[in-house]
Image (cartoon, rainbow, N blue to C red):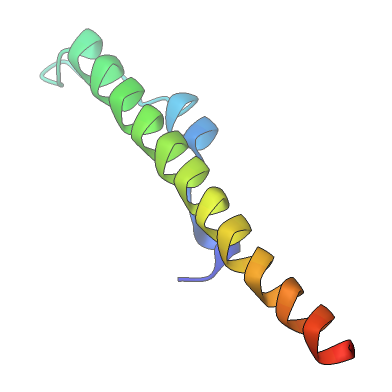
Amino acid sequence: MSEKELLSAMDVANQEFKRALRGYDQSEVDSFLDQVAGSIHAYTEQYREQQRRIQQPEEQMKEYRGL
C-alpha cells in the first residue's frame, strides 16, 4: 500500500456513515473510530521518532566519511 493510500488519524476521526434502520449503534461506532484514530496517531508519532533516530547515525556516518 503506498503512502497516499494510507489512512490518517484525521481520515478515521472524520469518517461518517449513512444511517440505516437496522444499523450499528452510532455512539459505539464513533467511540471505536476515536480509538482507532488515536492509535493511528500514536503509531505515526512512533514511526516519526524511529525515523529520526535512524537518520542521526546516518548523518554522523556522512560526517565521518567526509573527514
